[in-house]
Image 1 (tube, rainbow, N blue to C red):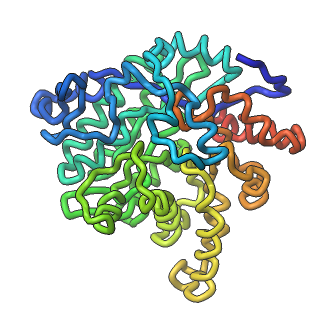
Image 2 (image 1 turned 90 degrees about the vertical axis):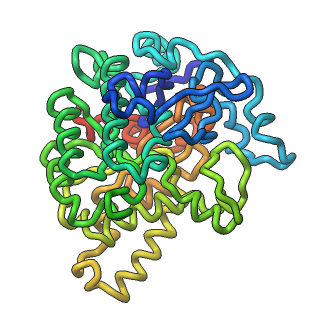
Length: 398
């Protein structure tokens, strides 16, 4: 592994753990035990949610996975030969201890030149969408996952391990009072510095609705009081049902299968999520919220800002005569893909609002996160230092 000369420490905004088979069920109340099952299908282990087998994550045991950074060339240069995903992924590997154990991960972080990292779950992204008609079950499963992460990735009852690994608990919002209880448990009782909220409408007993509506104000008020960083990582936001209507199918979201129509619309969830923050007013009611958009790239950002600017010009009363662009640039932080125009993003959002994230050890990310510096080598060192870790350290106050 090559070493990069670094005049500053790296704080990675996008690292992942791979869950074990008991991650969703270890702390699940007995009455819900059958909701999550692992089943054998033609010699392969699959996950079943409420009796429905999911292909969203092809190998949910993560015993064998794609190599970190396997898709680097694909994202940088495209796929002119039309290779299959299997060909792009190349040879898989057996999971190593660093994917599942924080002590082993710290040693690998040393090799990768990562001083600190936000640590996100992987399997969690399938839960909320597949249980959207069962709000109480969603809370139970997410709470079970959070307690498993605290057990296996925390230290001394804290989500922060060795001052270097900042595991991010999930907060699901269907029942606001329960979300507040989980927020307090994670942040106040167990030291979480950041929380993960799905960039999607919230399921509930009466259907779906935006997280930015006044109904959720008690939750965001508490988040603002605690000064916790809100992360919105790419997930299954439920938009596959719209793609399926165009495709004439009923397929679930399958992130590793080619679907050009879905690819064309892949940033619709994050676009709508960020628009909702201002169109439904939460960023005006809670101007001190800090929201980091992770693993959603940044290609969607400028078109959205342009569209919101046009809407504001035509209907300022819909925003309470408050500029939505100013609100977004005040509260939003963006972790772009390494292959994007980082200089342009820093001009649009300001260098203080750009976060380095490698997505390690996922195949979509960088095999060697420190090489991200090559993409910003022409920037002043002080600016690089902010993007590569300083901004995130400031947000988390560490």
